[in-house]
Image (tube, rainbow, N blue to C red; front, side, top):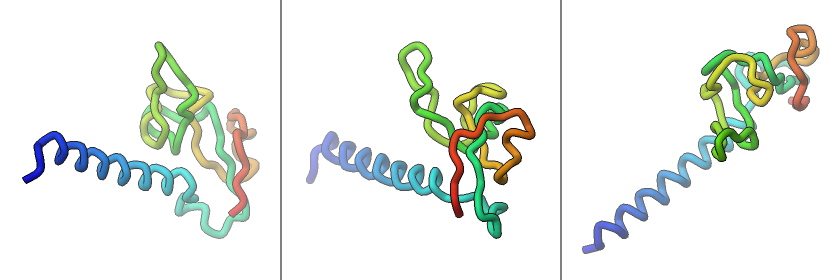
Length: 103
């Protein structure tokens, strides 16, 4: 029989591995509404609280990063939080294009 600490370590390792796979695929997947488009943009500064497609781990407050993925924006319109928009829309709604993604 395995010691409880070893079992807990194996379970934790499995959970971390699954979370890493899930978050990495979510970051690179285009949203369903983008099917048929040739480009979409990561548009920063327009996401509403809890409605972002993703954000940056690099934004740090009090020594800790906020988060690194969707639905976790702590407040409206943070420049580090972004949503996907069709190409050309971000500028029109007052956002900053962070990256253009070819589909």
